[in-house]
Amino acid sequence: MERRTFQVPNIGCDGCVRSITNELNGIPGVIKVDGTVSDKVVTVEWKEPATWQQIVDALTEIDYAPAEATEA
Image (tube, rainbow, N blue to C red; front, side):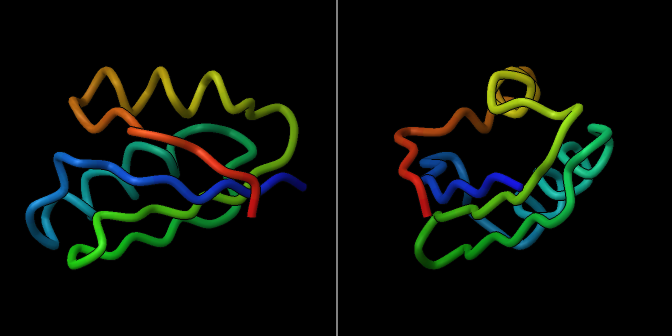
């Protein structure tokens, strides 16, 4: 299992976090998505067949691209 925590500058409300969560939960292999509005931070846990690139691509497509990513 992999896990990354990253900032998403476009998060402005709980609806944004719900959109991110719904989008990422649609990717096979994504296990858990947590987001915080106040910090504009998202943590994602996944396993195969999901990949980090799929997650980044999905977020970019809905205008919530990660600003930076770190291993957590």
